[in-house]
Image (tube, rainbow, N blue to C red; front, side, top):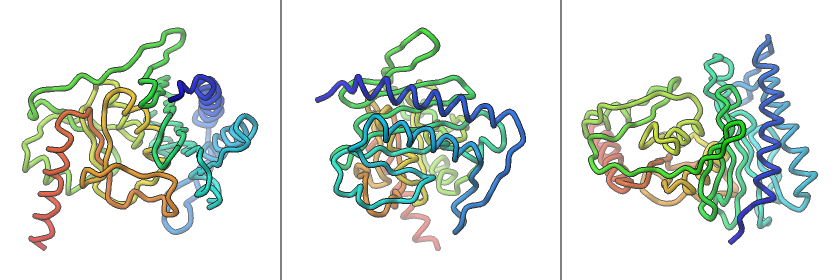
Length: 277
C-alpha cells in the first residue's frame, strides 16, 4: 500500500494550474470545434489544460504511461504498470454553457483499477482527491476535510443525481418502477460522482455505453476513498487501461449502501424495455 503523498502534491498542483488557465478562457470568447466521428465539442481550454497536465506528468513521472481524452492513444500503455488517465475538462458542454459544472480529472491506474485520483471543479472552487488506500479529502483554501459517505437506511430516501444536458428514458423508467422522487441535476460525469462523495446525492446511473475511462477513473478513486462503490450496470467492477476505453456496459455509482439493489432494478428495467420492443 502507498499513501501517494508525492502524487497528491504534484497532481493537485497540476490540476490547479490547469484550472487557472481554463478559467482565463472561460471569461472570454473562444472557438468551439466539433470533433470527428461525433465525439463532442472541444475548445481552446480543453487543449491548454491537456498541455499543462501532460507536460507535468512527463516531468515528474517520466516512466508512467498516459491516456488522455485530448491526445492520441499510444497502446504502449497496455504494458505499463502505472497509467495516468486524464480528462482535461470533463463536461466541455457545461463549460460552453457557462454553468460552472465542469471538472479537471487526473487518475492513476494500477493493475487495471483506479488507485488514486483528483477531481477539481475550478469554477466552483471544489478540489477533492483520494483513493481506496488513503481515504477521500476535500480541500478548500487552507482547510482540509476528510470525506465519509453516510449510508441511508431507506431506499425511498435516496437522491439520484442526473444529467443536466442528457435526458435518459432508462432513468425515467427506473424512477417510475422504484418510485424515486428525489433528484438533483449536475453537468459533468465526474461532478455527478463527486456529488455522492460530498453527500448531496446517493447514486448515479449512466445507462449508455458512451462513457470512457477518463470520465470515471479519477472520480471512482475518490468515491472508493469515501466508502462508495462504482460498477457497470450488472454490478461488475470497471476495468481500466483496456484497448477499448469505453465503459461498454454503462456505469452505476453509489454511496455503497443499496448498490446491488439498484443494479438489479436497472437490469429489470432494461429487460422490460427489451421485451416491450
